[in-house]
Amino acid sequence: MRQNWDFVKIDDYQADMREISDSAASVVTTLRADKSDLTRTEYGSVEAVVVGTITHYGRPALQVRLRLTGDLVKCVVSQDAVEKIGLPHSWYETWSNQRVLIMGEIHYNEEGKIARIEAKKISVIEDKIIPIDEVRGQSQSTAFW
Image (cartoon, rainbow, N blue to C red; front, top):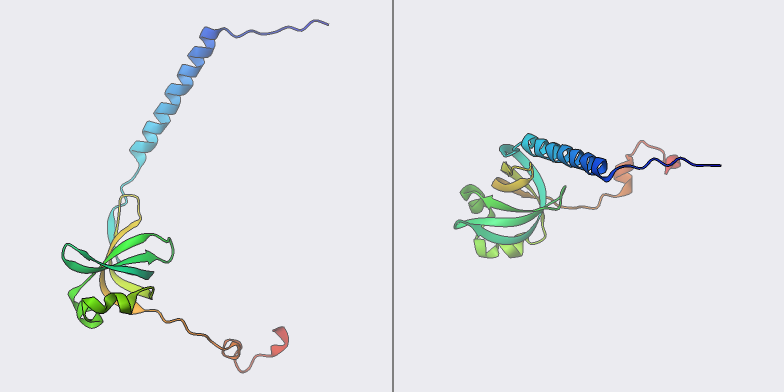
């Protein structure tokens, strides 16, 4: 039995590779051009853990780790919040590893990630243990538990 082999010319193969390469480059250029700038400022709140105290252009600030993403973000504290919190030298002792809710201006970078927070109010989120009976309620049967 005889087999027929189709041979591809090297020149044809190189021409095809050039077309594929040009197409790929065109797609990459288009994707880069379509990338939107997601820079914006929103008003709201984020949950975070305080990991340090710093300054931002001479203003008191906290370094926080965001609860949802784990990103480290600078949180600049407003003068009103500073007065409510207390003296800066006691901040680290007071706020270190505290879970907090930060309310204020949330600044996003061009990728849409939180870049900086201008805090108007900071509240400590206290963890507390709730007895199972409170979760169940008084009227529920324990048959399902």
